[in-house]
Length: 144
Image 1: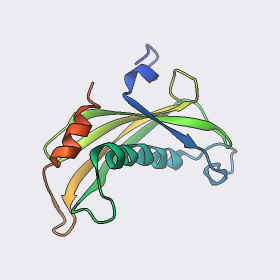
Image 2: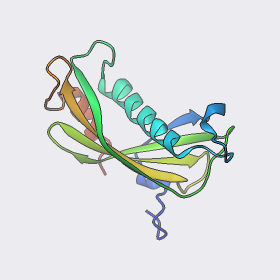
Image 3: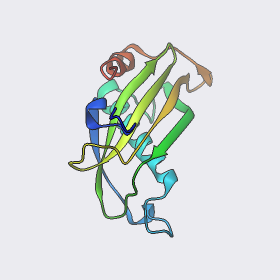
């Protein structure tokens, strides 16, 4: 993280492009604060699906978000191509805390950064379960 407390690209392991949408802007002419959480969710779940084999439609395991937070450093507006950076800050038995940041393309410092925690749950029993091995291996690759 930079001396200013604003994360930089080097702080993250994987990046996904995201297109801002017309509906992301609010009445003040910038991307609304709650939309950043959607960007975070998109990046983390894309990674789980593509790299960890998470089956969001028919799998027996689902990830529930139980905690989240975000700090904002600079506004975004539509249309603006952005990228979401992803890492794992903590990996537990049944939960993971992601570190995420949103960057303008080709900029080193984040416009926003935050976290959220997934708890992995048996879909039918609705009870926390250990992270499945394939997901755990994929998440371990995102640890610092």
